[in-house]
Length: 507
Image 1 (cartoon, helix red, strand yellow):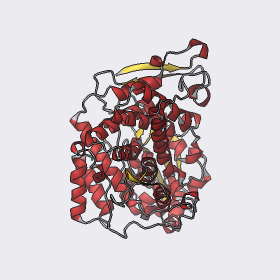
Image 2: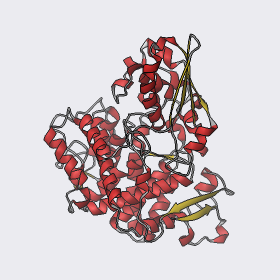
Image 3: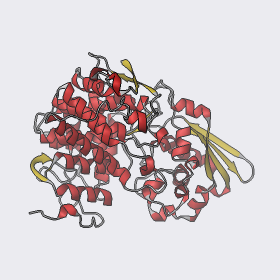
Image 4: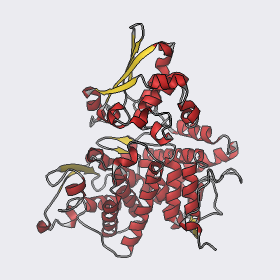
């Protein structure tokens, strides 16, 4: 890897393009070495992971609304939508919008945590959509996904967004543009211009994940993918974009991040070095914010030791700065303690998640979030005994540069009414690469079977898994196989989506 210092330069210095981060990312997308076998296998795992959670969410209201918007943009030779099959095709950017929303809705797919937060798998839907519309093969798609993950991981390691209350779409969008550039084998100059545009437009605030969290959280990856596709299309037509987008006097670093005196060090592969960033990422066994994964596993194990949960006086979770301030009581969000909160808010409340996991000794992507479940009196009582505190040692472990030492969990201290104290800690989720049951292909296949058993027959499930596992060898024009179709009638409108602008004028 080669590390580059990224800082603000005055306009008078006329920073050469070749020294700009956007150019170096574009170069990374251009010089792609043959992929390692384990990288290709992990990409297949994430394709399955995305399909699992997208099909499980296919009839939820936000997904239905996104799909309705996409269906208003038909394209005879476009891309397909989860659940609808090859007979229904839409413009690639709208397929990215709808499919990425379906993947993100349940907060149930892959993650990467470092200086910032990320769901790198959010790049897959737009990349598949472009590959379908351009009639590319599995090898091109593999190259695209590997590069997008590489760039996304590099940015998340180096440039914190949450510190400045910016949403993590600001790293996802340029990574997706880089992936599209790699897939299409575009010139460095073209990818550079597309990255400039996506970074320029992708910055938004963290309010999307604060207080009462709305369904926009699910739409963010679709917005990012749509933006990336449109930016690449524009750049392919020879149009330029604002630059230097990272280093300029009035750039994102100067005014949206650390300011003109800040410095960031971004590490990208050297020429001849294959992208392996995906191997540092990990998925979720539970449908909740990633920093809750280890705590759910711990709570399920610890519940049996506690016994009578009514005997609990207080629960304290000692954890990292990030967990305490994003999903814990350090966020100072009263909505995180409210039984009437949205599902999106509850899956970002470690207090709620802990209470339900202790009571139910399991986690379920639907049952754990129903209004009836959130209003259960015993749950509310237990929920309100829980608080989080930042423990510096957990923050250090969270940010450890060695991926084998990073920890995203915490220590639970349960005080009973009779004065007894029960404790336990979990550094990483069981499914994490460093966990007790790290996920490989069989676990992803089982997740797909579990989440789709009521909508797909065994033969259809096995057929999809076989195609996904060998996706890298799929010939050009056959990538429809990566978006499973459900039987007629299984994809329903969900809650009424209302009537929007796009519903008018269709023939």
